[in-house]
Image (cartoon, rainbow over all chains, first blue to last red; front, side, top):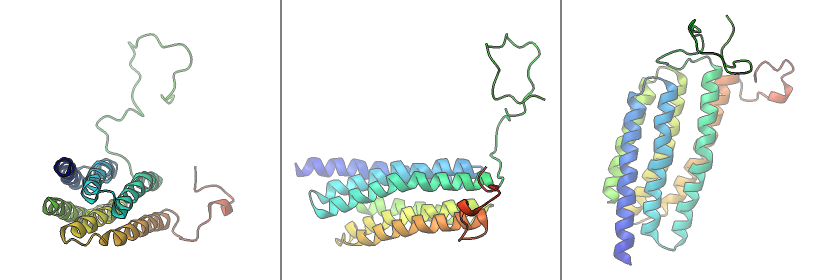
Length: 126
Length: 97
């Protein structure tokens, strides 16, 4: 039983460390703030949670495991809240996301297929 | 294996600090600071297990709560220019569109 818990813990901690490094590289290399938030969320969810879950298997049924689960709950609830506030503040400040193709002001093609019933939404009239 | 986790956390911490220094906008720096806080929790947990003193985790919990408050304070300051800004008092409703 001890060996199984150790093996599961080792796998979880290794996976968590892998996602930590991947998320950190993404945080450094992504082009703008929104994509960087996407990379940071990998650290906050997958990396941190897998690593702490691995530590839970090391702690066993103790008060320490409860505290570790509390850390997971903290990250689970407050990480998305902080990300949401950050994205809203960045949008409010007028930071434009980097787009490969800006579809907000696109030309409506002349040889368009017949429009679906009802008013087409999402395309501003010129 | 705790050495592996500690090394990964330290590497991620280094890259996050580089992003905090280089970040072109203030929001990049806030994001990197938030990441440093999250990674500090993990570093405290990993070092606690590494040195056989897992009581470090309590410090990590406190640090996580403080990190959330700090992030919101910085974001609110850069959004409204004032930490005491009250949305309900804003008569013109120009802040939240």
